[in-house]
Structures are given as structure tokens and as C-alpha cells.
View 1: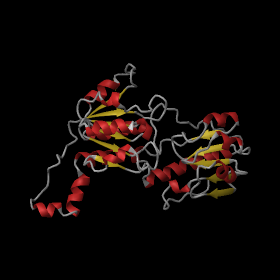
View 2: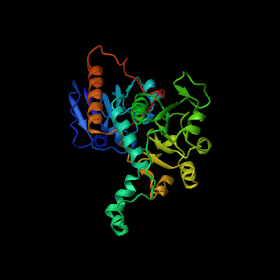
View 3: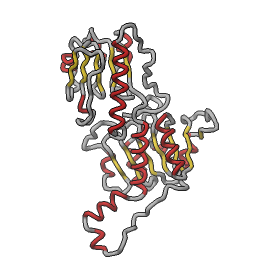
View 4: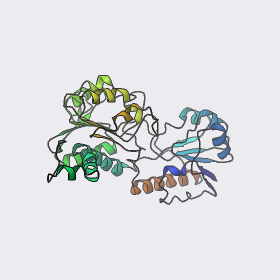
Length: 330
């Protein structure tokens, strides 16, 4: 069985990624451009394609007649034409549940850094501002505690629930946002608009789909009454960049943290980058998911799924495609 891994460079070079059991012809490319002819050539004769972010379009799938399985090395499958897979009898599988700890811890690292001003205060030390000032401490930028604050969560899957647990350990109140316009499904959920009105911190962990595209926009930001810190740990297009910039510049937000961008890496004209000097703005390069433990767990799950596919009479019935029900990461 021939398997081709199209973008190994989406994993850290220090992480060992052995061939899945049952693969007799294993080809690994460090990176693959999103060029139809190149991808088709690299998949020639392959029954299994493994991709993290390389686009697998209808044309590519149609021109790869031996392809039987597309295994996405992530939870989101937005880079694959799922309808084309169905039309050509290609199984599509993702990997879920590998980054819960990593994303939750990254979320709180960012919250603490933003609220306590860790980045500007670090810069003040290494730039000599503290030394020139002469006082025993600097505290012009207010340092904000988490205890007693309200955290609103949009997207309550495994990651959202773990974030909730950590928040409560800090002494925070946690609100789970129901889908906008819907009645709360249970007492555990709060109407969407109320969450935005009450929260001191809002963290996005929802998948990207038609309902969540630009969920964070001028209208939803106008609901905020507590000048919240907002975090996008979901997908870049969940937030309208221009609306976020306008709200922050107008003083409606305390700060903004994002691990994701509409285009990755972001182009020079990405509106969010105009906020780079703000003391409570933090950007990370879509690596909230990527702790060493999470990468190893992702590959372990992926290899088990590929091996199950290869084994005679095996079925992929337990492969769960990200369908927008809970959360999306990496």
C-alpha cells in the first residue's frame, strides 16, 4: 500500500513520524505547493494521501484514480473537497481529540500574558525602561486578576470544557454561549447575546462553517458591555478582522488575542497587524495545538486509523469528520 505525506513541515522537525503500519511504499514531502499538477504527480499511484493543510480539490481527486483514503493530519477538513471524495469513493478521515490540553493551556497562557501585561513589561526590562525609571517596580499598565472575572465561551467541545475547568480553578464564572438566536439547550448554556454582554473575557473555540463565518463582527462586538479581552482560538475567518480593529481602536475591547488569521501566514495588509503595538494584543502563529505531546498524540491516532483502513475487511465507520458540532483546532 502506497501512502504519501504531502506536508511534513507542519510538524516540528524533532517529532518522529514513522510510517503507519501496513504502508509498504512511504513517501514524505517536506512541503507541497497548492498547485494541481504538482499534487497530482506526487499522488500518482498512491492509495493513501496524508495532508495537514495542502488543498485536495475536486480536480486533484478526479485525477488520482487509485486514491482510496485521504487522511487529514488535523481536526478541520476545510482543505479537502468532501463532496468530491464521496463522488469518487474516497474515504475522508480527520484526527480529533489530540490537542485538548495544548490549546486549553495556550489559551490561558495568552489570557494571563494579556491581562498582566507580560509582553510590554518584559520589553520594558530588556529595553532599559525600568532602569531609566529608577522605581522598584513598573505598574502603569494595569495588572488584572482572573479571580472574580466572567469568561464567555463560544464552542464547548473537549477544548471548551477543559478551558472551563481551568477558569473555575482561577475563581472565574464561566458562561457557555448557545448558538446565536437559539434558546439554551440546557441550563448549562446562556443565550449568545447575554454572554457577550456579561463577559470580561470571550474565547472562541468553535469550528468554521457557514454559521460561524464572521461570527465576531460589528454587530456582535456591539453587544459587549464590559470592554472584554477577546481570544480567537478557532479559525481566522470566524472573526471579521476590520471589525475587531475598529472595536479595539474605539476602546470597546480591552485587548485581542489570536492564534489564527483569515490567510496563513497573514499578508502584510492584514488589518489585525495594525494592532501590533497594542500592549494587550498577542498573536501566535497557529501553534496553540502544537505542543510536543499533542503532535505525538496526533500522529499516534493518525497511524492507528491508517492501519485500520489497510487491514483486510476493516471499516472506517468510527472515523468522525469534523462536522461543526463542537470545536475546531489545528
